[in-house]
Image (cartoon, rainbow, N blue to C red):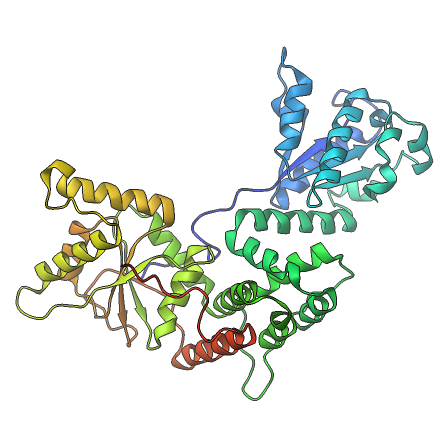
Length: 445
């Protein structure tokens, strides 16, 4: 068997970087004697890039003849935060005042938008009241001081790093339907319950309620090893703090996703994500003995509060097994897609069937065909030719037993790990008031 390894376990599809707008005024030319504003801007851009952000400022997008106010407004509204570089030049700049007014308006309208004032050493706080920025009420804006040695050493202030960490969390929530679903579901929980759960999962710091929910969501969706036997599991204890005070719907969402993300290997989700993006060879094998393990893997890989649609097809017996299996898969998938044109030339037959499969893959994720059997090389080749757009997943109760076929062997759970996943998931769903998962496996008509 050829096992495909991935160098980056975080996933196959990169999340776009958060955009930070830098509002500044730099009147000096490079090499001229001036205040530290030019050095500070360049150091800020460099450090933001190193922290995983996309820093944008007027030099990046303004060209001669542009309507600068409109262009700046567009960039500000397309960012997740604004850093106002407070220099002596910025205090008297009408352009900076215009940018700051837009950022301040976004901050007031959207509690998740960060407007951060980064004060350079040559600016005194007493100077702000008489500056062109006095209308912005900078006392209400997050402000931190940037020391000379930090600027020279390309180091960001500790407070700014903390603010940027929150921007990153909010951006991940926007980018991840799963994170957003858990954060939204936690909105009903009492603040003291949120804080108790956060303490159990190691979330520290005096955080306001909204930040607390997002930090707790991040902690709940983090892969973590089970607790040793006979010791209480922090994950279950944390869920026990918040689930009973939520309505059954949101509680089921938090319970289901938290346990799956905590226990299913992140690298396995990345393997499945990489398979989804391949043009061919979308064949994997999963060693699993428990019924819920397959669903947990596909839920973890989907990045959504529901697993990828998966259809089980029984392996036919007899000498004509490959052809019979291909026919069974085609009929099952066509039934799931309500495609009745495979035998009708006017509906384009095989070409039409593939078009419908491809459209579904783009809209809702790959269709996973589950075959509970060991794959062999000849069978895999025939299935790949017949169904290049499907994700074929062979499920077996043995690891390393597919040496004859070129497939991706998904990182498995141990036998005890599967049992622990099932027990923990069942306990969490009980705490949520559910006797079974709130998102059962897809059952096509």
